[in-house]
Image: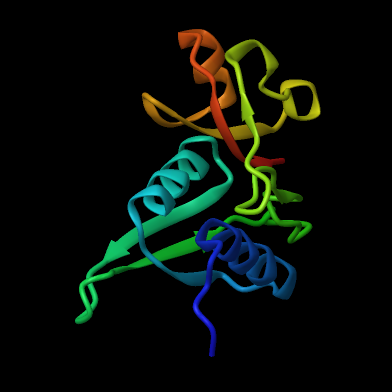
Length: 135
């Protein structure tokens, strides 16, 4: 088993796979940046609930309850796209951060002010690494 080099890519893939399989809950190894991305997904209404749990190894786990439409059972997250990858980092100034689906989706950006959404980055006029796009 090889070590995962792109932990954010792994995080997004786990959510994507659980969504496609129709799972209610997905467990993901925790890190500060993944916790912050989880908080953003919750604040923006893409996930139902989340919980940070401690594990014996000290890393911790993030338990995410995925959100589906109650009638059609369609997932709230239709697409999760990794934008900046370890092999090709993508940094953008505040005025060039991509607008996702004309403002209907969000871009998650890692800035000097922390991990924030594209709207917050434009409002505070800070650029940074565009981590992923969600819609």
